[in-house]
Image 1 (cartoon, one colour):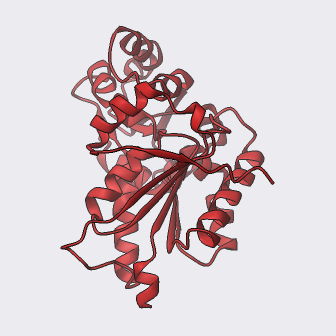
Image 2 (cartoon, rainbow, N blue to C red):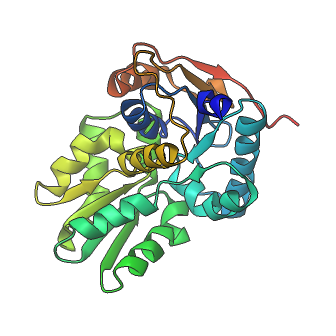
Length: 276
């Protein structure tokens, strides 16, 4: 058990967006070693067939377990969670977490008028995973879903604010404002980078739900219940950032992302596990 406690936590995403989940895990579990894998070779996952996304996720999880010896894995990607979570939980014997259920529970509890908005990638929105989870908890709630693919591109380019971001947000979000929603789920791990602009466009009366925070809480609780928390408050965890294609990580993102994530360093190393 002691060796299990010392093992790292693995996180995966299609690119750099999932670092918003990593940031919340860093905060709640500062003593834990974290290995982050961004599948930049295949980004974005959103428009891709969900069976193909499931294959990518399985490959990464096997790599994290066999090569990096992780004790738990967070699918820090909404499309990846939609496509693969239930299957991965069946075939692997370590805890596997996704980013949907905790956010849905939070949104349902926050909504006063039973009108919930969801923004995400095409894959996440079209999968119906969020919608189904919401209806399972509150069948009378209305869900207004909108895919926002350009948000992903803006974040990957390191564009978190400015006129281009503002106009794109107004285009995507205006129909949701008109629908009168009072809660909006940031259903893509890239979107918390744009929180300030999204909040401005939606207005103060609309509450934003960040799935990254909710899944980080879920991970911490699970590790505590299973005696897997590394209780060494005097020691800060080590963080390793890997990608499958380093050429697709923009320098602009590295500059702005480091500040957003409050990291002294944000250095990615390439490990293309898909060669074979």
